[in-house]
Length: 146
Image 1: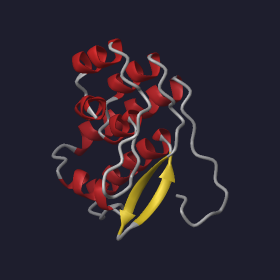
Image 2: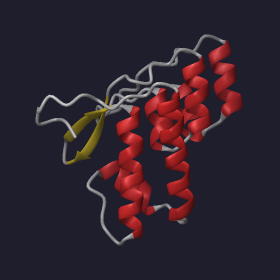
Image 3: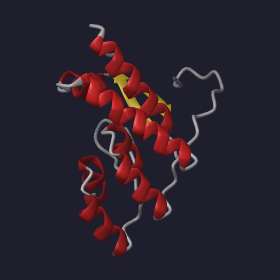
Protein backbone atom coordinates (compact mmCIF):
# COMPACT_ATOMS: atom_id res chain seq x y z
CA UNK A 1 0.00 0.00 0.00
CA UNK A 2 1.18 3.52 -0.77
CA UNK A 3 0.45 4.65 2.76
CA UNK A 4 3.00 2.15 4.11
CA UNK A 5 5.71 3.45 1.80
CA UNK A 6 4.89 7.08 2.64
CA UNK A 7 5.04 6.29 6.38
CA UNK A 8 8.29 4.34 5.98
CA UNK A 9 9.92 7.15 4.01
CA UNK A 10 8.53 9.88 6.25
CA UNK A 11 7.02 11.53 3.16
CA UNK A 12 4.64 13.85 5.01
CA UNK A 13 3.24 15.53 1.88
CA UNK A 14 2.29 12.21 0.30
CA UNK A 15 0.97 10.90 3.62
CA UNK A 16 -1.25 14.00 4.01
CA UNK A 17 -2.56 13.58 0.48
CA UNK A 18 -3.36 9.89 0.98
CA UNK A 19 -5.11 10.58 4.29
CA UNK A 20 -7.09 13.46 2.74
CA UNK A 21 -8.37 10.94 0.20
CA UNK A 22 -9.43 8.60 3.02
CA UNK A 23 -6.55 6.15 3.01
CA UNK A 24 -6.97 3.81 5.96
CA UNK A 25 -4.30 4.76 8.55
CA UNK A 26 -4.55 1.24 10.04
CA UNK A 27 -4.42 -0.88 6.88
CA UNK A 28 -2.11 -3.89 7.27
CA UNK A 29 0.58 -4.97 4.91
CA UNK A 30 0.80 -8.69 4.50
CA UNK A 31 4.17 -9.51 2.94
CA UNK A 32 5.38 -13.03 2.41
CA UNK A 33 7.05 -13.07 5.82
CA UNK A 34 3.68 -12.29 7.50
CA UNK A 35 4.88 -9.36 9.62
CA UNK A 36 1.43 -7.70 9.36
CA UNK A 37 2.74 -4.15 9.73
CA UNK A 38 0.44 -1.14 9.70
CA UNK A 39 1.63 2.38 8.76
CA UNK A 40 2.38 3.28 12.41
CA UNK A 41 4.57 0.17 12.65
CA UNK A 42 6.54 1.08 9.53
CA UNK A 43 6.90 4.71 10.63
CA UNK A 44 8.14 3.53 14.03
CA UNK A 45 10.69 1.07 12.68
CA UNK A 46 12.14 3.84 10.51
CA UNK A 47 11.96 6.48 13.27
CA UNK A 48 9.53 8.70 11.35
CA UNK A 49 7.99 10.46 14.35
CA UNK A 50 6.37 13.21 12.23
CA UNK A 51 4.57 10.52 10.24
CA UNK A 52 3.47 8.87 13.49
CA UNK A 53 1.97 12.16 14.70
CA UNK A 54 0.15 12.72 11.40
CA UNK A 55 -1.23 9.17 11.30
CA UNK A 56 -2.40 9.48 14.91
CA UNK A 57 -4.12 12.78 14.06
CA UNK A 58 -6.04 10.87 11.39
CA UNK A 59 -7.16 8.16 13.80
CA UNK A 60 -4.44 5.53 13.51
CA UNK A 61 -4.34 3.07 16.38
CA UNK A 62 -1.00 3.57 18.12
CA UNK A 63 -1.53 0.41 20.13
CA UNK A 64 -2.35 -2.10 17.41
CA UNK A 65 -0.18 -5.22 17.57
CA UNK A 66 2.07 -6.28 14.74
CA UNK A 67 4.61 -9.06 14.38
CA UNK A 68 8.32 -8.54 13.83
CA UNK A 69 10.52 -11.36 12.61
CA UNK A 70 13.26 -12.34 15.04
CA UNK A 71 14.75 -14.72 12.52
CA UNK A 72 14.21 -18.13 10.90
CA UNK A 73 10.42 -17.74 10.80
CA UNK A 74 10.16 -16.78 14.47
CA UNK A 75 7.94 -13.75 15.10
CA UNK A 76 7.46 -11.49 18.10
CA UNK A 77 4.22 -9.59 18.67
CA UNK A 78 4.64 -5.98 19.71
CA UNK A 79 3.25 -2.47 19.53
CA UNK A 80 4.87 0.65 18.14
CA UNK A 81 6.27 1.73 21.51
CA UNK A 82 7.86 -1.72 21.99
CA UNK A 83 9.41 -1.49 18.51
CA UNK A 84 10.82 2.01 19.09
CA UNK A 85 12.37 0.91 22.37
CA UNK A 86 13.85 -2.18 20.72
CA UNK A 87 15.29 -0.06 17.89
CA UNK A 88 16.85 2.31 20.40
CA UNK A 89 18.44 -0.56 22.35
CA UNK A 90 19.62 -2.30 19.18
CA UNK A 91 21.33 0.89 17.95
CA UNK A 92 22.99 1.37 21.34
CA UNK A 93 24.15 -2.26 21.13
CA UNK A 94 25.57 -1.66 17.63
CA UNK A 95 27.42 1.36 18.93
CA UNK A 96 28.94 -0.95 21.56
CA UNK A 97 29.90 -3.57 18.95
CA UNK A 98 27.07 -6.06 19.63
CA UNK A 99 24.90 -7.81 17.02
CA UNK A 100 21.14 -7.48 16.63
CA UNK A 101 18.83 -10.29 17.71
CA UNK A 102 16.20 -9.32 15.09
CA UNK A 103 16.81 -10.16 11.43
CA UNK A 104 15.00 -7.17 9.84
CA UNK A 105 16.29 -4.72 12.42
CA UNK A 106 19.79 -6.11 12.17
CA UNK A 107 19.85 -5.39 8.43
CA UNK A 108 18.53 -1.87 9.00
CA UNK A 109 20.87 -1.14 11.88
CA UNK A 110 23.92 -2.25 9.91
CA UNK A 111 23.13 0.53 7.41
CA UNK A 112 23.10 3.25 10.10
CA UNK A 113 26.16 5.42 9.74
CA UNK A 114 25.66 7.83 12.65
CA UNK A 115 24.51 6.01 15.77
CA UNK A 116 24.23 9.22 17.80
CA UNK A 117 21.78 10.77 15.32
CA UNK A 118 19.82 7.52 15.17
CA UNK A 119 19.65 7.34 18.97
CA UNK A 120 18.30 10.89 19.08
CA UNK A 121 15.72 10.06 16.37
CA UNK A 122 14.42 6.99 18.24
CA UNK A 123 14.34 8.84 21.55
CA UNK A 124 12.13 11.45 19.83
CA UNK A 125 10.01 8.66 18.32
CA UNK A 126 9.46 7.18 21.79
CA UNK A 127 8.59 10.63 23.18
CA UNK A 128 6.00 11.20 20.43
CA UNK A 129 4.45 7.76 20.90
CA UNK A 130 4.16 8.21 24.67
CA UNK A 131 2.81 11.75 24.31
CA UNK A 132 0.12 10.51 21.91
CA UNK A 133 -0.92 7.59 24.11
CA UNK A 134 1.28 4.75 22.88
CA UNK A 135 1.50 1.81 25.28
CA UNK A 136 3.69 -1.26 25.53
CA UNK A 137 2.11 -4.59 24.71
CA UNK A 138 0.91 -6.38 27.87
CA UNK A 139 2.84 -9.58 28.55
CA UNK A 140 1.02 -12.85 29.09
CA UNK A 141 4.04 -15.14 29.23
CA UNK A 142 3.46 -16.66 25.80
CA UNK A 143 6.47 -17.74 23.78
CA UNK A 144 5.76 -15.33 20.89
CA UNK A 145 6.23 -12.25 23.05
CA UNK A 146 9.20 -10.01 23.68
